[in-house]
Length: 223
Ligand SMILES: [Zn+2]
Image (cartoon, rainbow, N blue to C red; front, side, top):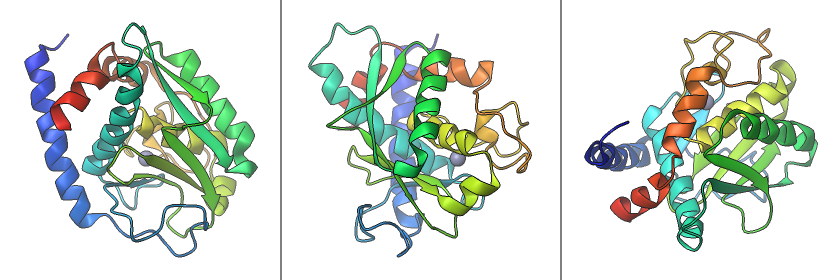
């Protein structure tokens, strides 16, 4: 258990990561679906599945944005024992089953945060063609999205890709050098890796990040 002061220091670090990411995040491709946020949006977080755009700071910025969005809802219901993150799958109709499986996998793996499909979503799934593959991104102002690339989801196990990108929503960074048993190793272990489940370490990391009160304190310190 870390002292609260340590958590606050980590939050300051996230702010620097956000500033750094703002200067380096690539613009969204014109092949992104029309419904996706436009290229003119400020983009703080950006990370792909296969490792060509690894950016740990962007992952943290993405988590920060999602956590702040969730914290607003949590503030209205301070007695809740776990945090619910609401997603929309309406703009990724080809991946409905993978998105549902990903949510089920995460909900059965961790206890401090719950994924739920619904309106007034904290983050949204999109689908389309992008040569850079699948990724997680954010506008840095409380809204995130996950883009699922058609070609990559045929090359790699689609449920693993979806659960991996969703892992970024829950605060996990990429670790491409890890084994197949690790979800956040993403495309690192190659196309033969089909494991869609987070390992024990990844589960405890997410439970730590979403332990009661964390999202609320993060929002207070960074808003
Ligand atoms: Zn990733």
